[in-house]
Image (tube, rainbow, N blue to C red; front, side, top):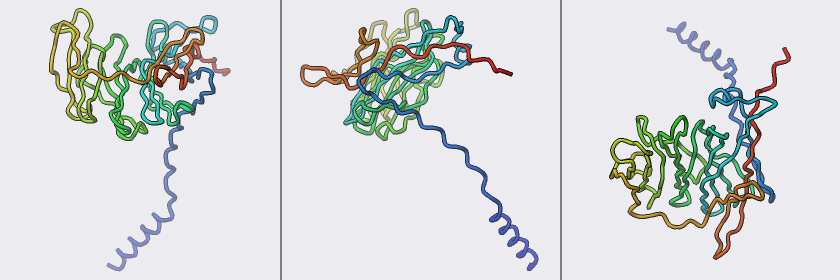
Length: 271
């Protein structure tokens, strides 16, 4: 018995002397983008895998042009959020969700980009609860999904609308309360059955129940109110302006450049 106790004590001492394993390095935070009156250029570096996945032919002599498209904006207090995508001439490469905590002066990407997807909708029901909606776009529009937040956009979790492949795009999205929402989906021409679908969620977007199918577009029972925020493409500056309505006027809170860094093969290894 005394020998067993001494053996256990030795093991404990050995464990204390063993240095702890090095923790995994924390992921680098997304870069802070500052708005000083000129359109912000969203950082983008095309990889060889991106070029191969998209089926693009890019070279140093003829790089593939890349563009940012912004689709919707939402403001809650001093926070702003904008949805969109990064795309080439004929293919969408990544979704984009941008957030600002200071009214548009500084921006970060709120979630990781989703390859082959685009985000088109953004809404907050209160300062803490919000949703961003979109779908996969390659090879065809399909598998609509949401990003959900319950902490004012600090963190988001992705939720698919369907457990199996489902073709179509989210056309309308509106939550009347933080637990009650509706959306409509356009499945595209040639769809079997009704082209348009209406779904409702009783739990804040975690699950959806189909309520109607129709061959004609479906209107939400309670349409969303007119937003005081908008995204406006501006030709002279080649940018998307993030604008806020103040009375009869729209004022710019930020702007993002349309053109991004072009895609071209990475430099060859000197070895």
